[in-house]
Image 1 (tube, rainbow, N blue to C red):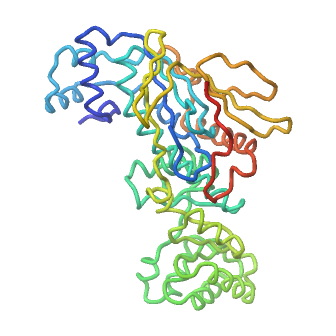
Image 2 (image 1 turned 135 degrees about the vertical axis):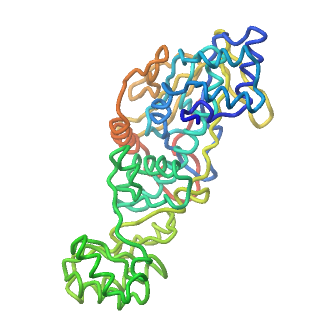
Image 3 (image 1 turned 120 degrees about the vertical axis):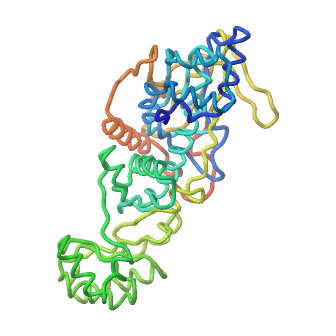
Length: 427
């Protein structure tokens, strides 16, 4: 059964390759660019995520005998195409923004230079990885902002595809989430994992106290006890009775969270558990998190709103041919135009180091003081420029994102709908 990424693509990529092989255009030197024409409505910036996941997949983008058999079964029987696919090895160059970078409409976040057939066959994989991961990261970044340094935990595994869950945990951690519930994300990327129990564990036992005693006996008094299965007040009293005032945390997963959190804090303090933290969950998004800012909450568990469309709308990235044999080419369709020519991009900063504009141009950029080039070399001749492990790549992307955020103007982080944080200047 096929196991690599080669079939994670659309059929029309291969029909284009077949036609290009037939008419002799498959080897024309081409440049493809990935960019978003616009950000989701009201968003002030996007966050690029998934680049290193994509680069890690590139060496495995091969058409095995099983893959080719699967294509034949689907009616792709052109012998010239199948022979070309059997020998496919990406030999081109890839440049782009560093993973974790902030981007804006028109930002050339990834550039692929290769013979047409090699470049076009990567399109679907590139877009599926970058669109998904960047959407998650962009939504998660807003939640981190709303949390104002209180920790956010990613808990979306049960609300999405099993592999998407791992990618989502990675993207959320990249922008500042502190941990995930997903064990594969912990194994693959070294993300801290956390989790204690659900309501089912309490309901399994004859009473709440028995459930709490079993959990504390196994995990210690520093565990987090879920106190809202029956009655919150009684749940808190029972939790402190069982674990003592050293109880690590309680979790609230339903009800009017601001009111419940305030009452829970008062009750915990009254019972002597002044160091016990309050963690809240229950379909939180950035607006719900912001609404809890005045409440005595110590951390947030975020799931559904992060990994589904309501919290992470698609970034709408596209993969467009912008140059052919050194000649700029552009799409002119109404409402969906592209700008021809391979782009350069720099971010302008004022004397204080605050970003003021992004310059995207097909001409050389005349450098100014405070400019930071955004394009880095990623692949040359089909080989990764800086081979790295998945964990190392994530650590570097997380650090780069933090640096990029620190240079943004304060209005970039407003949750209200507004214009892009900085102006994009194109030429």
